[in-house]
Image (spheres, rainbow, N blue to C red):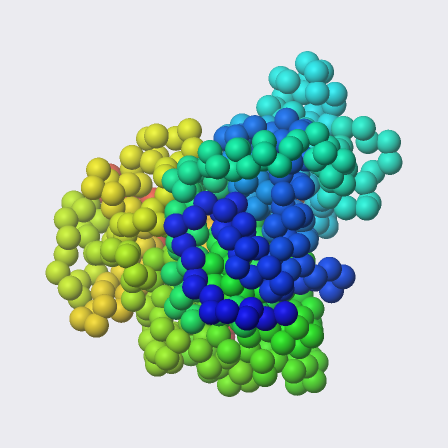
Length: 552
């Protein structure tokens, strides 16, 4: 049922309090819609309170880190708000992670609770947890020595038989009766808008992924700003097909929509037809995604038979959008107000965005202008001194949206944020005289494939573990479908032999699928700087030239 009084978009609230406010002012408005379940804001608030009390009764304390490893199941959004209400920190887990990556996240985050589903093929999450010793009795020495995990909560009806280490999610409902409403309200009232409420793991330029600590002010206000750019209202309905574990999903999607009173229509896992059917069934007006998602939807064989004319606007991010694709999204998908956004997890994530009425050129050749209350500037990458307008250098940003820091990593935090609060993005860019930002490359070596951030050092470590490899360097090469794909230049041990397929297969199962090297070039030596550093940009240029030659 639509709201009957004017709705004022909201910001500057803790995440948990945001939902309480929506339940008060838009109680009957649809908030969360799945094919088998429809919740109003009042329904969602009641559900979040029950689960919050259940989590309290289970022993989850304020400030504890809770790792959520699941696709866009209905419980995900409920948990996002339930955890926020009790001051626990939601640690989002990439659903593509394999055992080693997940173990690293659990150890680095010191998560005390894991909430999970059975898994996503080919990865069995429960089997991984069992192998890590997280499903043994809570007081068992093996569990205590392996990880800090105290409880594992299982979502789904396919719970493995006889696995006593898993707490069924419905058990939280029964436990909720042990906690009074007053106790929950007292816990919620103690949660401040600047308290860390969310941790997202992101790959940086060196080392393994780091835990980005984000507050309610960071993510609620950033969602608000991006939603305002789309002119969202309670009449809008977002087809949420980007993963909730990403800032794109849980911040831009959930909080960007809810701060403006809109409705979420999630798709549990991206599948082009399922997305198009959701848009048709729910008359969605908003769609977010990375360019590869929009290309896949447009190439769906039954695209012309599904009605997507209800669409109006959305955000495309994660990779540059070619002009032909943008024109098809605007025309064939009926999204005349499609926008482009730029950001990074450390910035909550939005920094810039195009306007709904910007030209196609601005939407494909720039990443728009800075968001309200956000500062951007270009500096010399070496000296960090500001450069004049129009000059190319490193993009920095400052404002409410900059993260609280990296968890348990003060050195990396100090390297990322200067004493004046400027965040180094590592991206090469320029700002034109009209304020539009043009990202022209990356100063850091981060690879972005299909919107996923990949630290090349992880790929390099995996390759170097192979007995035939003397050294390896990973980098990005251009890919029409994914924007970029992972490639590597490999030097073999003297007398050793290996094929590219063998090396890729050796990494499969150790790295998430999106991190696997898809192109390998065998070299005798690496291009070096005078100081002895490998010049990855030259490796990329040489590899792309070879790939182009092989295609002609």
